[in-house]
Image (cartoon, rainbow, N blue to C red):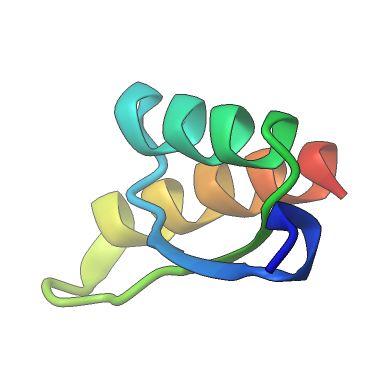
Length: 60
């Protein structure tokens, strides 16, 4: 199976590690899908979600 046919689900925290991992997987030809899970709630989670969403939009 060619990489571009393989889908990868990655947990997006809004931080550098998950963002770089998503970028590198996409660069290698994988179809990357990101997921964000709000475990805590509140302002910090909202900010993290916005960061993850920004990265996802840039990777499209």
